[in-house]
Length: 295
Ligand code: 11C
Image (tube, rainbow, N blue to C red):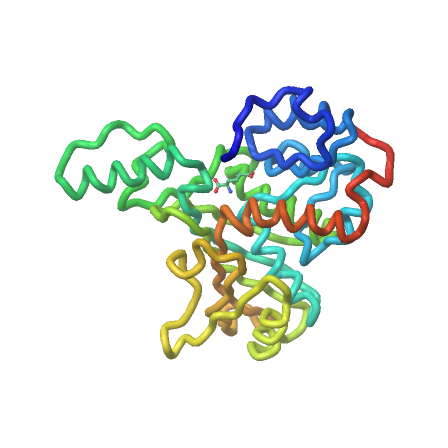
């Protein structure tokens, strides 16, 4: 049996690690209370991700950064995590000059209510019934694609698209990384997919790219196009690995390759990454901060 209780500041007394997966408001209210009580907070929201004193971690990419935690560690947005894993694998073979990515994001990125809305709208459309007005998105999601994930901000990019840029720069330790994202919501229940074009400072062969991706921890290469074997939501949902396939030469860029990836947004995109961060802290003996709390 699991006991569910309202989280209050006192809930953190005597706790070692708190995993917070809620709104930014909740994280902003509760994380400092936990830190005050000596608790390590692993936060799944966007509130602290870009704070310079907060490590933003994908253990396979920058696990060593947990060592400078001062009470809070953030986990990235669920589209950033699989992307930086693929980029970290590839940049072992050649310097990356630019990245162009389009995402295909499932509705569980929004939450349970969006999943319910997708299913209800799909049922109603198939039954020829009139749809209720959408509550989760600006338009219906069933039998549709929405080229908008989160609100629009600077330069007509969405927050989600800028998260992919800024979080990737921080995790990869590459503040000059050139990356442009287009984020799209698709009528899929679980798993986010991404089409990624990567340009390098020198030629990159497809074989070398495949080898680098296959060797990288946490990535499963699933790339047998002749047999129609490639990652999809249907084979990546409920799995821990980031699946990569369709690796091929970029016909539009001399030194480029293109790939396709899929990852369970609830596992590697969220809960699994949080647990792996906790393991990394235990392994490196830094569940207790080694530097003074900054929050
Ligand atoms: C989505 N990626 O699919 C978002 C959900 O910053 O942690 C996660 C938002 C975040 O809607």
